Image 1 (cartoon, chains in turn brown, orange):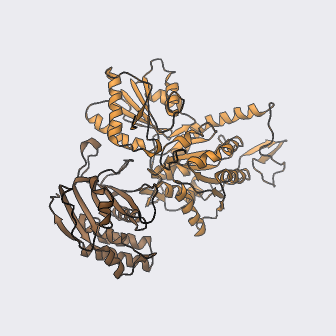
Image 2 (cartoon, chains in turn orange, cyan):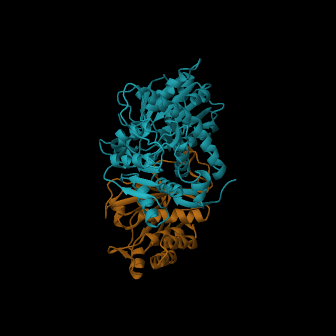
Image 3 (tube, one colour):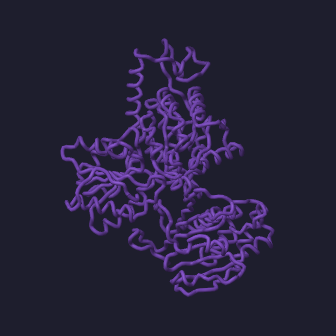
Length: 206
Length: 412
């Protein structure tokens, strides 16, 4: 488990900061909220944070989480992250998000399996890859033509980090959309959970 | 007895909407503005879903939103609105009218920088621009406190010894758009019936020998007028009464906070100020809004290093709790006041000026210095506060020369 450095004052057995980066319309903000709700179900405290500027469809959009076993009273930007969730490989070159990685970082990437060159930028990292776009297309999950991958990425988070349980995530999805849409999204999360591969684990995460 | 509650993931705006849902005002009139928009979006959903019987009035500007609230409250109704930044400035004219007509309107303000340059992020300049408008003003630290305070605000406003409108402020984006676990009452009637005692009951006054309701109620035996011409013969007396009402609000804020705590199990200091590690402190920090959350981690860290530092968060800003400030800070050597608001042409930020004025009354006064920070949503990391707090330690030891005002986290 990660303990935040003493400079920030938190003495906690569990403390994570998460950056979600997607394109406007892909649902990164909703993903951070689903994750926070699922964590709350398991009595883990979470903030789900969003800052708007001039966001628009297609442009990079960020959402954040703070996660801890204690109530979090921080109210400032998440600048560095222990977990970075990237909704498509093109966002790596387009943004500086990898510069915001902590030394030991977990990167969760939606990709059709193409190899990703990020070794030069990071010292120790765990890379988890899932083809969330294919999962969305298989389930015919689209909004305005765009594949809905956010719920799948929450499933991938659970696989890569080992928490929260996929059960809690599916429950939350079904609560948020109590209909066929919810069922399909829960299925996408489940599929992503099953299919997420840890393809690089050069780090040691205790 | 603490009432049954349920946990929800809500941001500050949603927490406000839930509070309004549980209060069920007679009228909500609002115009959308970031970062407040989610409040009225969610509330309009509650209306559409039939969860509240509120008359929801979509208006074309904030000036009209406040005017509609004035009409509703004058007619004896419970009225609510929400705004931010430029929207609040546009309301300004009607804010003074609402308070002088003694109308218990409640308004949520998601604090945002005032244009220009145009900016949608947090600072307190919007609220500070209306600090003399005669409204009771409360500042919250997180989304839970927002839910609790919006509910309390109605009871404070409607108290017959107060009858003043109330602003509930919370930081834009940092609170308005940050979701966290929030406990809300499971049964809205705990709020509507048990806490507020059912629909609003306008105060009774004696008029021409008869008891009448202080509202535009056609059933009144003697008609009541709101807002007639009031010149040099009575205007001053009415202003003096308004001033007394504001003084009365101080105790009512405390009483209502305590009464609510018995239902919710939650307290924020005594409802007026929230001290943290102040008892033996030599250095004190004064701040409002969400920054104190981050500041407390820094204080914990410095305490571990043996530095006697503490925090006084003001929850109540109007009426200004100057006696509490004198009492709680009389033993410290150095006070750093943190203003998240513009100070153009002033000696310092508004919080600094009033805090310093309050401490002037003490026989032995601490050094009081001002930091202006976080304008336009500029980040407020713990490291930044640490730098300032270390400077305060330096002042207490005589290694740093005292100053009046500094700007924290700005490129110069």
